[in-house]
Length: 188
Length: 86
Ligand SMILES: [Zn+2]
Image 1 (cartoon, chains in turn blue, orange):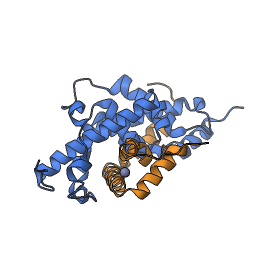
Image 2 (image 1 turned 45 degrees about the horizontal axis):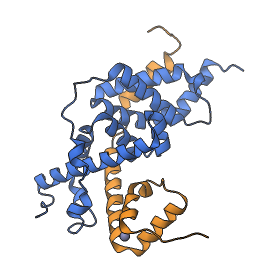
Image 3 (image 1 turned 30 degrees about the horizontal axis):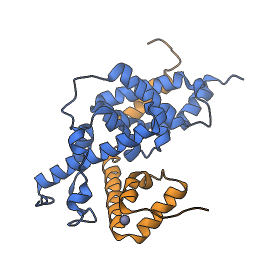
Image 4 (image 1 turned 120 degrees about the vertical axis):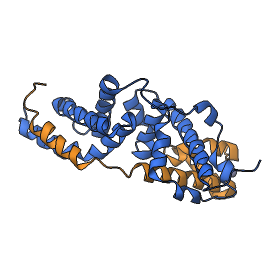
């Protein structure tokens, strides 16, 4: 059975395009550059449409598209030294925000004062494999198994990357909140 | 016969993120749930982390694909794809 190009495009439009926001957000965190993110998404979408016949209906389309996006990024968009400084995860590993502020702000009210840009900046400073895992999980809501498929590492690695990325992010955002005076530093 | 001693706080916190991520199943999931229901410290800790994760998602998910990109995809991917020439 052959399907016409028109049918294929219609299917692509109806099924793949709804994932555009997710693809763009992930591309943005991978490239840290809006115009490169747009180019990356367009390239990935073009590849996806051209290999649409390889996609098996009923399987996970989001994971399939994200895999194409990620491969395109690695092959054509990754710049090794172009990024800013990344946070040292070893330092952040032992940090637990709840231990710092849990008694003073158990409901995490100071989060309300931290704006979008600051959170995105903190995410962008994570090393790539941690950043990518955190975005897929905590921003896009993908389950561990799907992230494992996309990033080609075992579920255990996804879990440990996520754990360390969250700790690092908490540490980073806490430092920022202290600096801005949103919360006082814990007197030790 | 099943020995069921429940979890202590350290064991419970070990599972914190997998629990909040909805990735725990079976007995471990119910052990954690039961512990949190009966332990104020762990309950507070879990709720704090849940709030953190919600905050993270809300802040980082505010962006959408820009309209020009959407138009580009329609024009250059969906309409022009017929020509395989690069
Ligand atoms: Zn407890």
